[in-house]
Length: 275
Ligand code: KIV
Ligand code: NA
Image (cartoon, rainbow, N blue to C red):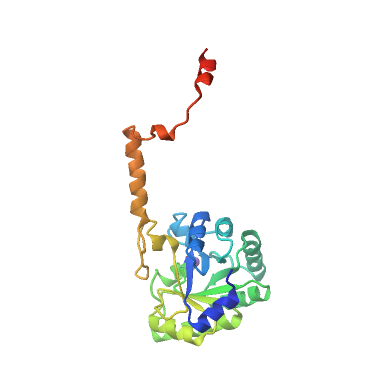
């Protein structure tokens, strides 16, 4: 399994770090089979798997439930689990308790938290407790109601300055990596140059130290809006619906099941049964 040290080394030698989200046993297994460097059990879980319209309803229990399945599917891959909405804001004790549950019950290798400000202390106290923390800046979906929508962040001087300062503060607090979501490519590049921890971009340009995509977006397995920063490498949605529709029509037409799909009782057993 690649570790925190390997990721820093990859940044140093300029080898891009590939991260992908996964939420269950098969998605984790496929991600590992395809050699991703790290898996994120993202709270995007709420939107792509559980059907909520934001990440806000996702609970620690749901994150653990899914992370356990991901761990079973990807035993040899570094797993980062998102701490969900408000699970690291109430108090230091509550934050540590939630992180302890995620680490111990799901077997994750790190947790991810969104934002800076008060979250800088969270990063530092988790790190002191031995929890590896990935920071997440730029578009932070748990704050969608504060940000006023899912929009590119850091486009003006003031917010760009804050983003640069926040990134530095995350590193100084002990973060092992920084996810940068939906920021201008120039900031993605500048922050990556400025930090010694790896940056993992999503809609943050080509110069970040790594990239992350949501599993369902990458393979076209889902419903709804696909953001500009996504490249859909597959479109399994159509193939799945096509397969199911064929099943429906074959059952209706009595074409399925066929003889080869059925089981047979031996003749003598039939005789014994009916005399
Ligand atoms: O929840 C998630 O999938 C994420 C990534 C988009 C970075 O946080
Ligand atoms: Na997330």
